[in-house]
Structure formats: C-alpha cells, structure tokens
Amino acid sequence: MKKFFIGLILITLLFAVQKTAVIEAEGMTCPLCTSAIKQSLRNTPGVIKAKVILNTKKATVVFDDSKTDISRLLHAIEAVGYKGKVLEVDK
Image 1: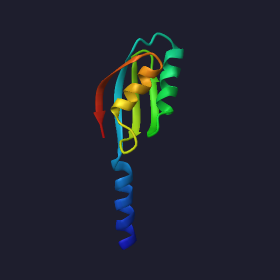
Image 2: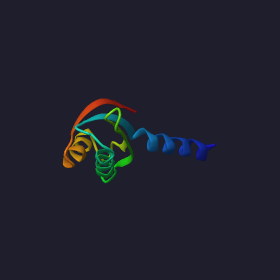
Image 3: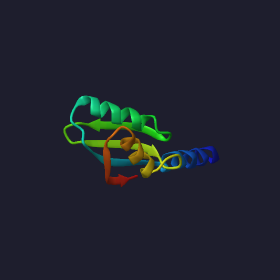
C-alpha cells in the first residue's frame, strides 16, 4: 500500500508540471509556415508536443512549465518570423 501512494504522488507530480497553451500565430500563409513554427517550438527545451494548424492559425503546445514558459514559446514563434498571441493557457 505504501508503494502505491508513493507511485501515485510521483505520477501526480509528473503530470502537475504539464500545461497546454493555445497561441495564435499571425502571418501564416502556407504549409511551410506551419512546419517552421512547429519545428521551432519542438526545439524549445521543455516542449513536449506542438501542433500547428494553418486554417485556424493556431499552435497548441504542451510543455513542462518547470523547464519553459510562455515567453519562450512566443520567442520561438518570433524567431522564425511570426507574431504569437496567447489565446489560452490551461493545465
């Protein structure tokens, strides 16, 4: 029983640091734009998953908030020539 509770606490801590951000990427016009933004986000330390959709001009990013933050995600988008605007951040 003791091992169960220790495992449960560790799992809770593991998932407690993951957050999801939805960021609007202004200026995307083609599939190459989405690829550039996705690659830049994925190369950011702490990013677990990045999905970019051209039609909605939105990037959904799952990240470890103990390793990165919103300003770094926005910087990753700006580094490839686009402007990011945070629409939503949740856990």
